[in-house]
Image (cartoon, rainbow, N blue to C red; front, side):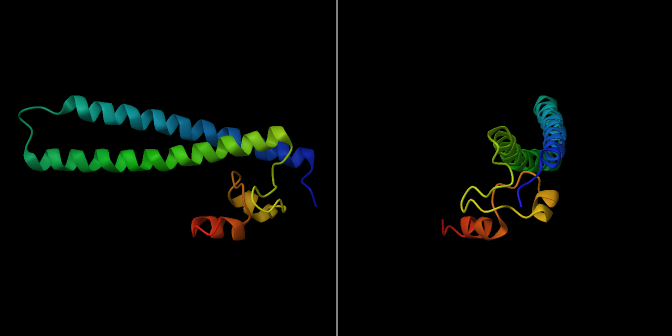
Length: 121
């Protein structure tokens, strides 16, 4: 059963809100990393420098994960505009509503996602 227009609009609103939150978080993270880079000085202890480097690495890894989610959100919004939201990119089957409620930016069914992650597709 295909998604109704009002349901798709609800998902679109959710996706746009999620995109705004992630974009805001990314901006804050970038500012924090810049501050950390600017605050390095000659009087800083080696252990403090190590902690700062570790924090910067964690922030950058989180940023990469958020960027990946942002790309998936953009793809989902693209699918909304194309009229294919809720349809698996691989099998063209409907993505279960429970999956979309949990992960509104899902572009594949669980089975297709699993095969994709295992490198079988």
